[in-house]
Each structure stands twice: as structure tokens, then as C-alpha cells.
Length: 119
Image 1 (tube, rainbow, N blue to C red):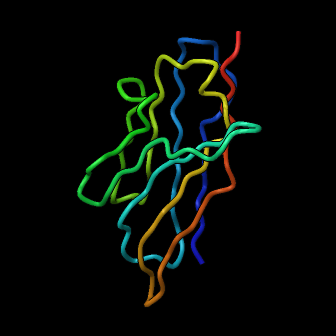
Image 2: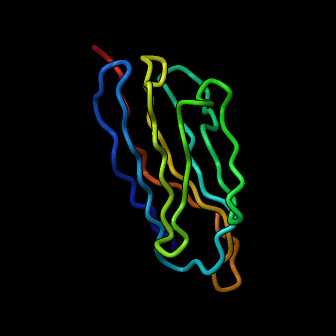
């Protein structure tokens, strides 16, 4: 099994910053992509940011220029630096990892961490 440990969510005022972290452990030997989705109450799930093993990143249009995704391959950890946060960024943020582990395709998700942007 593969475990994802998310951290870094919380309450922040508009214009503030937060950094989310997601550490992957368990039966995974090749990580192809990691990233973050989010879901606000009543809304669909949105891809926020993804990053490949080569470092290629993609972002949701509404977060471009404000959010930065990065990864530490040695630690199997992905980060999401969120700056200039807006109330509309309020959501549960979910980390994911895609890859292979001991002959098995891995497509695993974290439990989610809540980000609330409010004054």
C-alpha cells in the first residue's frame, strides 16, 4: 500500500500564504506524477497543480502566478506554495501520486487538508 501524509492547511486571511506538503511512502518505486486537487462545498473537483518526474508543471488558470508546485524526489514529497490567497481558494486540498510499485499501478490520494481564506 501507498500512504500520503498531507500537512500545512489552515485558516489564513486574504492575501496571505500557506504551504502544503505531501509525503509519499509505502510500496511505490516509480513516481510519475504528483499534485493537488481541491474541492469546495457544492463545487466540482478541480486540478490545482501537477508536476511530473521531470519537473514539468501544470496549473489551474485561476492559480497561475500565485501558486507554485515543487517536489523533492529524494523525500518523495510534493509541495504547494500558495501566495496571495483569495476567499475563492477555500477548499479541501487533496494530494495525489501516480506511478508504479512492485508490478502494480499506483494511483493514490491523501485524506485532504482544509484551506480556509477568510478575514
